[in-house]
Image 1 (spheres, rainbow, N blue to C red):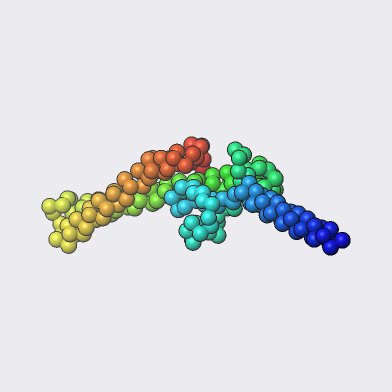
Image 2: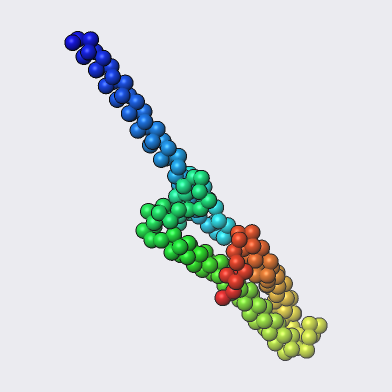
Length: 191
C-alpha cells in the first residue's frame, strides 16, 4: 500500500509539473504570436513605427497609435484592431488615413500661407519704396534720409524675396518629396 501511495504521489507530481510547463509554453506562444507596434508621425510628416513605446520621442507619445500585429500574418488582424480601437479594421484604417491626409493638407496650407504672406509683404515694401522715390524723381534726387530709407526698404525686399523663394521651394519641392517618400497619395496635398 505504501508503495502504491508513493507511485501515486510521484505520478501526480510528474503530471503537475508537465501541466504547468505546458501552460507556461502556451502563454509564451500566445505572447510571441502577437506583437505590439507603436506608430507616430513627426513634425516633418514622416511616419515611424517601433515595437517599444520607449523609442517614441516623449512629445509624440500622446499621439502614438498602439497597433497589434499577429506574427506570421501579413497584416493587422481585424480582431486585434477591434480590440485596440473598438471598431472594425477598415474604420481604423480610414480614420488613420483621414488624420494623415488632414496633417499633410495642413502642412501644405501653412506653407502656401507663408508664401502668400511673404509675397504680400514684398508688394507692400515695393509700393512704399516706389512712392518714396516717385515723390523725388528717383534715387539720385531727394533728401538724404529718404534715399537711406529707400535703401533700407530694398534690403528688406531682398530678405523677403529669400523668404518667398524658400516658401516656393517648400510648396513645390520639399513637401511633395517628403510626401512621396512617406507613401502619401499626391491628391492629399491638394486642398
